Length: 483
Image 1 (cartoon, rainbow, N blue to C red):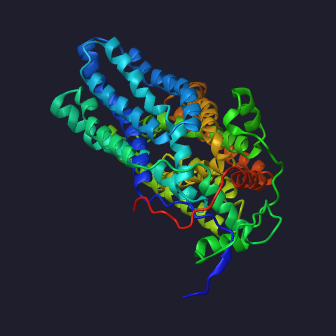
Image 2 (image 1 turned 180 degrees about the horizontal axis):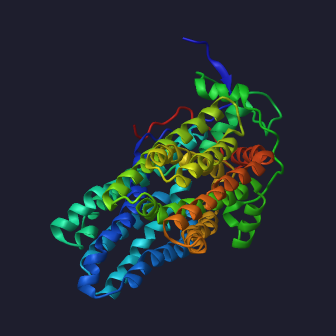
């Protein structure tokens, strides 16, 4: 056994796998239910005599409800027990699934859909919880697993939704989610509410062990067995001093003061703007990739769906790899590794996908589509972790609300490409050219995040110093809540 080494380290609680499983399930249900909604459209048109245009308003209305709901939920996420907030909303969401399935008219159904939008508003609570459940050194990997839940939900919707409609009709597109909603609610109830900022304070104390004067100091020193990854960080990761100091009581801030505090975090804004610009492409691809394969490569609907699954497989691998690499870079002491990974992944995805979409040969497009799917999602987990890294724990819920509002602009990607298709003459050639010429927006979004290189270390150092200032006490031993 190695000799004990002196580390300045708080003993953060270990919460195990239950929280990430519960929160990833929430993400899966949200994405899966949204994906399966379209399976009910033919039945709704027949039973309620509504047009495609009216049906098309349902996803938009849910997005608006989710956007408006994000504001109060962001405030509650910073002031209330977040696990109860999520569990309660999932219970309401589950009830709304049953009410939607039992709808006797379209207006009745539309009102029930507004209740479903509640879960859309809960991402501030989920992001805040993840940052406090798991160590900073593992944050990107945890964010990757959380986002992977959305892909698994979409796959579940595709497999089960068609069967449900075939067996029981359109109502079972909604009924099928009720058992999953009940399980999700129970899992959230079983989770323990984490202490705010404890993971930040723990990570900051390990960095402080590498030497004085990096971002703050503490006099609390004790003997502990060295954790290899944390010791690696403590030895190699050298942070600059924070750009500023603070005496703010975050619990008493007014909304205007909260915005003033958030404006002082340049790295957060660079990250949010970068993600928003990049997701313009993701929005466009979700709208136009399927018509592209039908028009340009003349594929039937089933074959086009099969080729598009290559993107989903590559995307799932890209999310997990991006999270793993981002954490590995941080554990090796590369503080700006998250920033560079976002930029590099965005540029490579653009370079790969442009010839893929430009080609009229499926033998060229299909493999490039798979590779591009990998790199197009690789920046997601590092960007989520980066934004969480630079916001103090007391404001993460409201910061996530601001991020959700700004990122809503990215939903315009599909509309922009639609206009470009018309400008290029429509048809197969117009669709192909529009997507190819729109693709560089993704690289631009990735390169914008490089503006955070000068501020990310200082903003991270500020968060760690604030955790040291506002979090009191040490745990004698780590407490294992779940495994």
